[in-house]
Length: 450
Ligand SMILES: Cc1ncc(COP(=O)(O)O)c(C=O)c1O
Image (cartoon, rainbow, N blue to C red):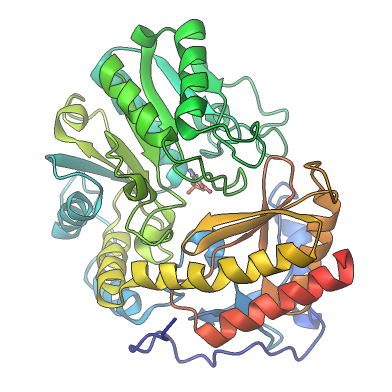
């Protein structure tokens, strides 16, 4: 991996611990947080942030942590990326909001033009902008139902699509996302995912797709399916990469049966997996894609982009929202996309994968608790099990994550069984810093699973 030629931050790119993690000022703020913020809002790492940039997060005690999380796959271009900062400052000084549905502005249109360029397929496209990934997914379902006149939505085991009422129904995992929050939206049907580590050995992508399709046809009926909604690599579900052939077979079935194939690229999008979008790796062209997270360098912005005839089927006024496509967020998105092009961040993501995957496979060789290493580009994970089995070990996963945190590396967990450590470094992280983060991870496994 070559370090990027353009400066991405002025913050020193180093791991520096000057207090225990969390330090005293963070502990003080955590006490204030507990007294005022709902206990329902969780915290992965109880350090309060003062600054962040490149591959580091600096806390209020002066500790500089290596960032292998990107705020959950958001700051692909790095935190406070220079182009994003400049664009936001310029826009915020011009105007902050008019509501695009009241008096429109160019930035929204320019973002939709960029989305038509960067998303898979060269068909005519339209987009609509929103604020969060959940909102994008909800709107993709609305659009697919309206365009097809059908109601059923097919989703997969281990899927995560958000926390609103409809997206809770679409999400697979009970704790913490759904527990006691029902009743959930109807007409949602869940079918088996292709999960090579947990499927019967040798099951191909085509066979896994046939299994899912047989269930859809028997239990839902092809003529009732408005949309098949899938993450091309599952995010919260544990970075499950389906076997080759799975996504193309599903897309083909949708085409043949007149349902809308929706790729939820909220976590995988915007260069994360080494291409603009993860569906590109198998040449799949979705009818609709849902986008958010990495799109706008940390500003809240989301989108549904897709075939013009599907997107335009909706009656005027049927889509929108007060803040959707906020002008400041649009300026940030244009600057983020420009940064991705100028710095070849898809190439940077591939280089990150080329560094991480061999190191994690070496870790797997010497650590029986590491059952699987998987991922693509800068979206990689290890699945942790009881040695010699596929039985999940969420306790060990938590211990290793906490050891990394204490030693100054931000890592995240994931997985239906809570036994996946996932890594999502900013795509602008330097080689040396990434290597040091992996050294810390190795040491944590040596101590807790050696
Ligand atoms: C694949 C996927 N879809 C949807 C969402 C929901 O996005 P948001 O948290 O912005 O509502 C997420 C968030 O993690 C996600 O990973």
